Image 1 (spheres, helix red, strand yellow):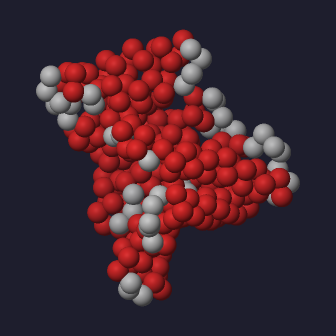
Image 2 (cartoon, rainbow, N blue to C red; image 1 turned 90 degrees about the vertical axis):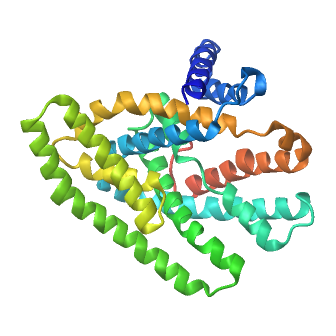
Image 3 (tube, rainbow, N blue to C red; image 1 turned 120 degrees about the vertical axis):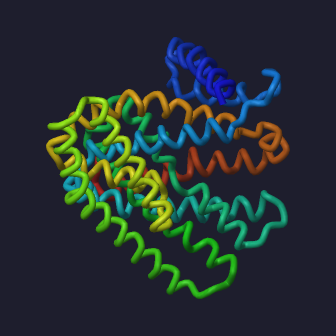
Length: 321
């Protein structure tokens, strides 16, 4: 384990500094560090599963921190842009991705093509949140709109994870959708109830009666605990659960202290997330299927942004957004 962490973090440090010197995002350095760390040059192979396990902590803390700064009123204020924008862009990119996979990816059926399209129609909440934060846009109207957009996509992701096995197995679709909607509603209610009744009391007690590191530990336990609850109890993503728990803490008087305590841990573990993504990069597979890779990039980098631009324009919002 130490072997994997040392190699990954050392390469991430060196290449992150290099990327910064080149006026690029440090994320690029972290991704390249993961690609290099996965190579067989280091004697014993680096265990990417260990690094990925640690990276989940970074993702959870990152989304918990975003939830601390994102209030329900912010979501309601951007719903008229975020909901139609997310729905239209997901539909366009999923359809384009399905067509690409069907006609370029080989002799694939329409079910497999649809799955491929659905997999590429959702943006990475972790990546976009980090980019917005690095460019000081997270707390702007554009940042709030983007986060609301991502929340809609995350909800769709939960539904997609429930519906894909149903589509493949040929079972009835309506009961599966109803079950997913009920679970999602129960998750929100459960976190809201536990957050207000349990989390608030525990944090109040710890802040008055214990040392600073115990308060930090309490914040970490709640962030990770609600993330695991979302995944194991309601078939949602851990990231979505962490985001919801962050929103609950953000409504309390402990928001600023929880944010300051979570930031150092978040940044360290978040680096491991991008390193682990780089470790999973298969350049050989990309070259073997270069036509599919190229067409997929066109969908991600051209078709979906153009769809977003059209939606924003039709809704009367500025082009900068």
